[in-house]
Image (cartoon, rainbow, N blue to C red; front, side, top):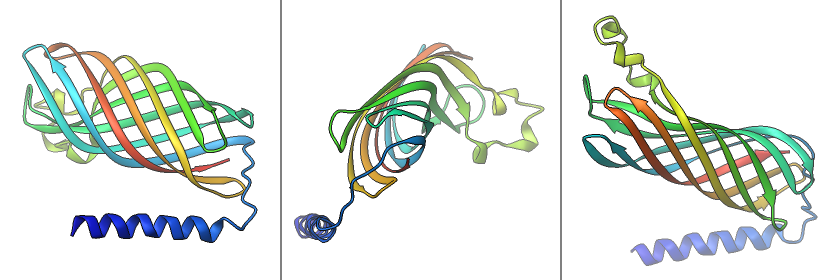
Length: 196
């Protein structure tokens, strides 16, 4: 059953690609850039008293400016949600980065990106127990430190000022939390849309 599904998906992408192959779809990357993507992230977290691996939701947003058709300066942020079981109650937190970044298109569709900035470990807004914030200040505690991000991507569909892409992103952050110094790496597989 899996092989039939995989074959059907691949056939769908081939048909879509061949359908649009006849159109002039040269992309014009210029001016402001905005993109967002979502997918799944695998986080490897190292706390002073334990190590933890989590698979969860991943989100990415970028905003910037095209310096040249193949070079963009960006502010990028990404988060991977994980289950925190340290001090206080068990809760969802996000492992994230906010970093100035550079994105370079090696070819018309293939790109690389990297940046260094602020790493964070923050509460997830939908899991905050607002009735308990006065009794447990960790409900809304934000931690920050060093972070960096790198990614590679491939634009699977392009229009004049828009592209859909697949990307693999790796993020690192090192922060001082209640438990002490913690660090972590998150790998994310994302599908995104970008506007130029």
